[in-house]
Length: 145
Image 1 (cartoon, rainbow, N blue to C red):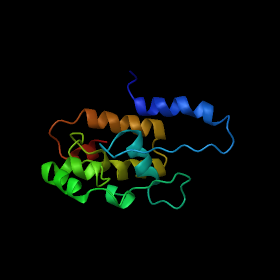
Image 2 (tube, helix red, strand yellow; image 1 turned 180 degrees about the vertical axis):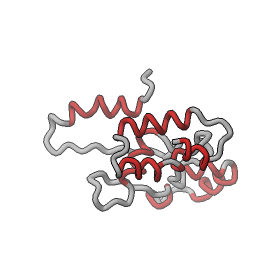
Image 3 (cartoon, helix red, strand yellow; image 1 turned 135 degrees about the vertical axis):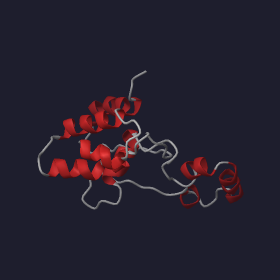
């Protein structure tokens, strides 16, 4: 199995899609961790008027008003975090890296904007920083960058 199956599936679809005029890719999923292709598309395109990608995020009972509300309420009582992802359309917060990559996003955006680093190297630098984290605070990591 590929290291990033979500990306491999998209890569496999694209060649066929370009042979069909006006093709449209629709992806449906329950959100999970704040990583991977689904989260990146959400992060980059949700609520952005200038995006060519439409991201629709809605809880189950909004998408299907006939769903049994008691089942959803029971799921929230049994496991609130899981139910929030499965029925509430929220990305899980309990599956994060040791250091949340969102802490570094403003710094990476600023470095990209002033041209200090280019995109592929930005991701590598962020990955390197996060993989070398011990028990440092975000502030000391940021100053090390």
